[in-house]
Image 1 (cartoon, rainbow, N blue to C red):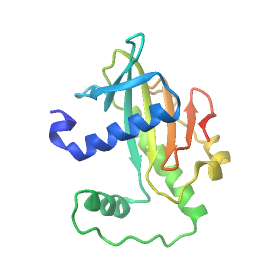
Image 2 (image 1 turned 135 degrees about the horizontal axis):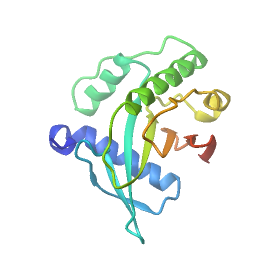
Image 3 (image 1 turned 180 degrees about the vertical axis):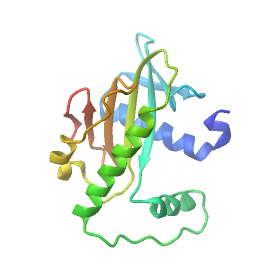
Image 4 (image 1 turned 180 degrees about the horizontal axis):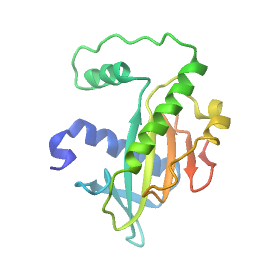
Length: 172
C-alpha cells in the first residue's frame, strides 16, 4: 500500500523534506512521486538527464512524547503539552544518538530504486542547530554496511550536513 494512501500527512512531510533537501543543496533533481514499498519514500528525477534518485526520509524528535505531540497537532487534534527539561547540550547529544539509531534501522531495510539512494535524517526540534554540534557530527559511527549512496542530516533551519560518503557541509 502506498504511503500516500496509508498516511497522506506522513507522505506530505516526506515530500516536503525531500523538496527542501533538493532546494537547499541546489540539486538538479525534482520530486516525481511517493515511493511504493520497497521503493524509498520519494522518487526524484534529474531535470535534464532523467536519471533517478531515491530519497528515504527519517524524522527525529526529542523523544516519543515530542513526536506524539507534534503529530497530534499536525492532525489538528489537541496536542499534548511538551516541555524540554534538560539543557540544549544534553538534548542535542540525545538527538544525535537517536539519529544514529534511526540510521541503523533504515540501514537494515532493503530498497528498490533505479539509481542512487539518499537517506535524509530530518531533525524536527527547532532548538537544534547542526553548526553547534559539528564536532559531534564528525564522530558519529555509521553502520559499515548500508544501502545508501549518501547520508545527510538536515535541521529545520535549512542546515544540511553530509555524513556519508564524506563529512562536509552542503548548506550551513
